[in-house]
Image 1 (cartoon, rainbow, N blue to C red):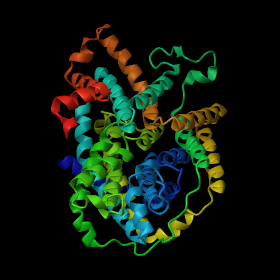
Image 2: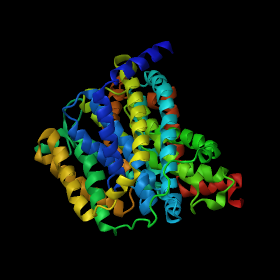
Image 3: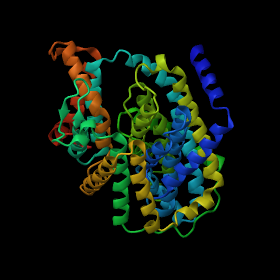
Image 4: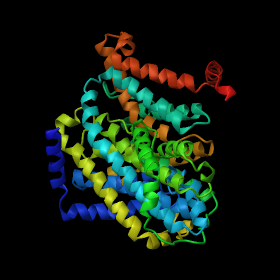
Length: 502
């Protein structure tokens, strides 16, 4: 414990300088702006900034990306409240009560509550990041190739299940499509080429950043331009600073939502939007004002914004300790860590224990900046929402193209970006979720290498995959998730327990 406190104070000393404060301020402000503009997601923002931080010192580069990440998830509440359009998918639940409050002339109050709830939620998540990450890293030392294989499968399956409630099969198809994309190019053990079809450019595989920028950037642009422009609520701002009695009145909801958001964030590939929806549903179930939800409930607004922001530190926990991201923005953050020479995974508490606690301070500083900007710059930020999308989207498209090219200076990466942009747009139109696809690309290399290494270690014996304790827990959980998504199984369980009579 005392050793952990020593690392925590040492990490604080690393960031106690003007450069850190400057980077936190501008990156958080950029994140809030990106989140506030419909169509510019947190994933896109982090991916674009990754290309701009390539020459920065590793700690400062990750600080900039985390600040943008925190700011963007919060910034999406601006457009959710004023336009009834979530700035990011994480703010979809915010529209249910935020926009009715804005139409009732209480937009300032709604944005103030969203700001405070977001801060509290992130701080709850940070607390668990500081406590759970070191402990989880020690547990992860027991993971071998068998466990990492099942962890990759579990991540794709659970992400597909939770990102596509109506049809889990679509989520699984997207996830395994991502796994297939990760198989393209030279395999990681003997460098044999796979699925290159004589095209030498594919020998190096599909780079993560172009695929991410295409899927979440170009596809978002095409989707936004296809939809009609939104209209802003006529009554904009009354008072922004929330009343303490409101916060105290909903304290149980905020704490519950913070815990739920953090727990959901830890689940690989699920993300902030699911954290918000589950927190909102739990708040409605426990509320004494159920009839107000969806009509301008302050409690519902607090639950949604607390849940999605608490998921941010939660998503960083598995990214740091298992090298498995908890959300799409965390996936880009993980890629950036690798680009900057960091080695997330079970060995991080041995090789770079200070870095874990540096990440804790990064999230804390970004959260403080988010709160300050959220309260002080509400009125100026509202003007950004009035920028015509016909002028904005071409600029974003140029950034989407330049960013991936700037990393490797390969024209091929631009083609990859455009291909995944079109593919992502088509899949979105067909109601396929994107998070499992991206997680599949991330986990594909882990799954491939782990399977082959495990088979070499076991001399081709598959038994250890099913008999080792952690492996058994993972494959049984994965099987239960798959069975639970089958309608016939659901109906059978409902009849068994009498749920269909309720």
